[in-house]
Image (cartoon, rainbow, N blue to C red; front, side):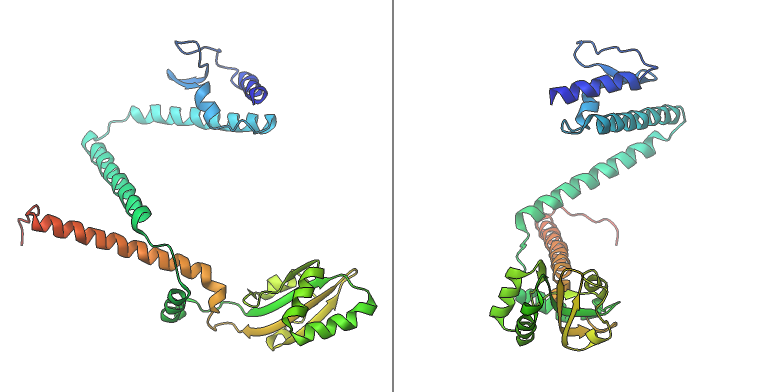
Length: 278
């Protein structure tokens, strides 16, 4: 770690040719750049470069940060010379501050009160109510697939096992395969299936059935359990993650709205709300 930091200091020394190596008043934090009497200190530079970064990347990060810092200071100096409406700036600052405070408070409410458990029943209910939002833009295939290295004497037995769709046989495929996807809830696009092999027939995949293709060193087994055409509804397992995100987002909005109503009612009961226009 110390060696890397020492390397960074050495690099900075070569980068900032135009600046003399001065230090802060307490002689512990070197100045690495200065623009219009505004200083960039070594400590700030160190804070943006992780000690584990190698020497070359450290140099690149340091140079990029310094270049951007210098440009920002020059722009700020130029902007400061313009006449500005201080009242407008103050209003903007105050408005931004209020938004930040509100944002932090809302995050606290969410962290303390949000129920993040989404049950299967909640998923199915939300999916049923919002199916129109999940129209397929490309076909999907509910498949099982496995790639296996096997000699010819084994293939006939493996073909039979694959066709039987028995749980024990499929478990055996999982053990002997180079790679496999045997979960019956998995849906793939044709592009994802072609990533296994471009020898599979998309036309045959439109109906339930098996396909097998050979590569130079392996056999790839594909079982199509179901297919969904374009403009059909997405199967629930395929959009589960998206559904959970949507449900939690709705819960957040509902939670914050309820909290606003609670605070409003309290203020109303304590006579803190006064409206002077009709």
